[in-house]
Length: 333
Image 1 (spheres, rainbow, N blue to C red):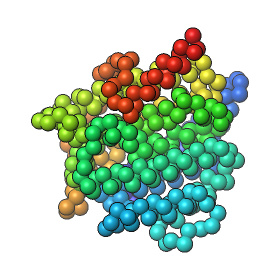
Image 2 (cartoon, rainbow, N blue to C red):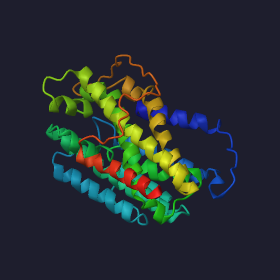
Image 3 (cartoon, rainbow, N blue to C red):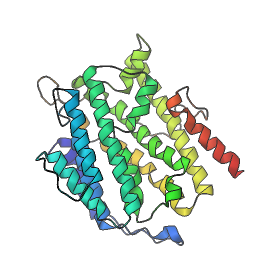
């Protein structure tokens, strides 16, 4: 088992017995009893997601892009038809089929389908990432941000939160513009955090991430300046998340308000794990396969963002998010 997977598995299992029952709140959102099948399923999905996202041996390793596309099509078919077992012996097809079958067994069909669509985004996001890395084509910042939230576990983890928490969003709530924005925004914040923490790992295996995108757009840009700008962009996005979360706490139904609050734990939880896992502490050399200790790094937690501007950045892929929260506040006034 990969070091990062082993660390995550140990942490989740160790905390399983430490969990205390939550106090039951009044009202329809108060049923916080966690269904065991959903807990077990999210653990299995995390393990598969980490395995699929493992670099440099992201499966599969076909010689031609067409083969990678074909593999994604097979995974798509499994997501669409969880009944018949796949004929492929490929372990990823078999594992995905098992997980999709378990999702189909959950009682909340609507939310299970949202998780399924999140898994589909993750698979195709990984496809895009792999092709981009192999071509060594560093995209503009706007294009990079447009696709980055799909190439991480957040794309399916965000819609999983109501299942974990034992509550549900209605179809109307799930289709709300601010809900859809949160579904992209929270994974993107986590992905940008990951880019800063894991840059040494990407460099060790010959790949690039946000810091390289920023340096490519600003020729002669020192790495330290790229880190500063990456954190500022991330903090502006985090400020937007807090803004939307607080707005929904005032105006939305109890379930939707809870959802907006709950998914914020993805951001902090990812940071706590990423700072300690051997996945980033011992990156692998792309040529020799040798593991080596990363340079020690620390994170200083702060309540003061590097950029708390309420204005959107000049990036069309995400600028419209700010337009929707302003419109929502206008209508609520």
